View 1 (cartoon, rainbow, N blue to C red):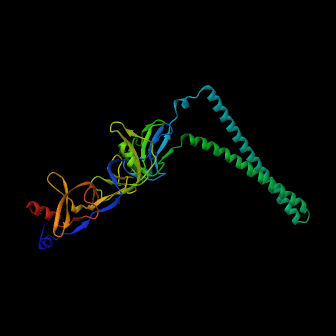
View 2: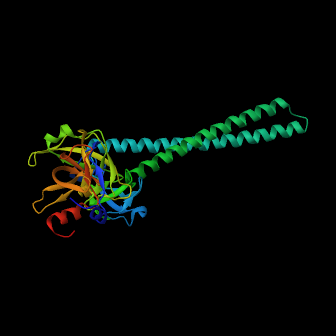
View 3: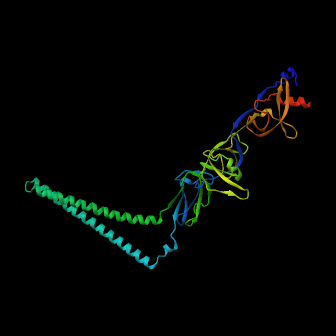
Length: 369
């Protein structure tokens, strides 16, 4: 029992024990993983030699590339089978070459003939116009000459176009046989590895580089199967780097392939978290705060009310009467930033000491604060 002066000097304050429903959470470890489909290995489509691209001359592992960036130019190489054609292939190629040459000669001859016919039609038109001007010809002759000129002009245009198409076809075939193939980045991301270099000869299917999209990453949380029943699997979780729990990011549940680890007797839960600032890195260990679905009404008191002795036992001081306080044992279930949740303690409404609790403890046992 204290005197009124002693209670005033110790500045003792009390609050009542309350029953509250608090959301419960579970702090577990997790790992940052790359989502399925966010990592891709770009391979060579054909056998050839790599040439450096001007847009990706300084690209290196760890650098960021944009979607559509040309990483390499692949110069195709003819395979031995194509370099040494069979007899049937040689006959077919010779026949195709002869047909192409013949078609080109015919088209060129048609163009020349049409040009000559147009010249003759224009001469006839000029003569008919002269006779009409001298009043010795008729308008009908002029009209016929104009019609023949227009027909000849259209025939020349058609022949010229046919000849140009054959020439362009020949050029396309020759160019496609030796044209370089651009190797582009399929999406924006980070170059994980560069497995080739300019000047290197590669075969079809060889991996040239690996690209990973880290705009969004997954958090894999290994959970003991016995806890799954009490976990709220539909709610978001808080993810933070180890030792930086105050700056947490929100991650939402995602549907992922079911995985488990038999060695640790755990099953995996997956959550997606935004990573546009490249805050998290693949395979990084993180802390995850998972909400539980077992909210219940419990006894709560301020954390400052709880004192512990040298054995770790938790105690509080309760007010029994004016200037009368009694030390009582409690069992702390878990704590939050400001509250201690009790599994056993004083009845609701009981006044417990907050400010001055340590002073009462020292007064009782003859020690200072």
